[in-house]
Amino acid sequence: MAAHRLGCLCRPRLGLLGAQFSQRAAAGTEYRSAYSLDKLYPPRQDAAASASAPEEMQPATLDIPLARLTVSYCRSSGPGGQNVNKVNTKAEVRFHLASADWIPEAVREKMASMHRNKINRAGELIVNSEESRYQMRNLAICLEKIRTMVSEATEKPKVVSKETTQKLIERVEKMNRERLRQKKIHSNIKQSRKADFD
Image 1: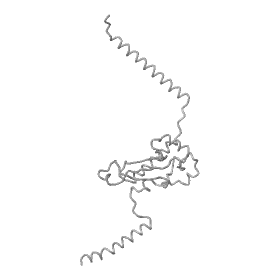
Image 2: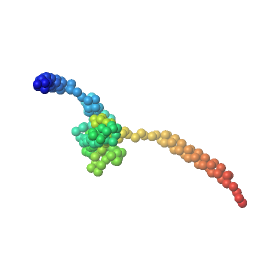
Image 3: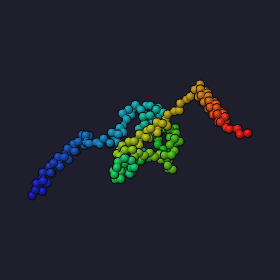
């Protein structure tokens, strides 16, 4: 009898909760974790402004298409205690570098030479992260690593002037002369310590 009363009391409440949840979902105010991907890796606001930018400027504010990436999760060796033995928190992101048309061709070639240790035989660039104990945060770290790789490959090397190179050469030659002079002094000191038994 008591179980029947409890069941009658719980049923309307469950109905109310379901109705409230569906109203929140319809209004777009459903619960989102602090570690959800849209909070850790928000979409860019100036997408229309970047469409008119030249190709060289785009990698600085690069949008990574998540549909073109292969994301997998596995056991992590990072922090988390016993949790790491039960939950797949390590994130691994891979994509085929040669066919990644969202990165300019010159940048792709430079990335291939800079990060050749992270490219497998199939030509996929592999980036992984196990820094955090949260899956979505590790995924966001992987995406940030990819963005950093692209920005590093986009940077042009600094052009050194002839005067600067000449100063550097003179400084190195002066250091070498001083080193050889100190070596000669040290050698003379050691020679003077030798006893002459003749």
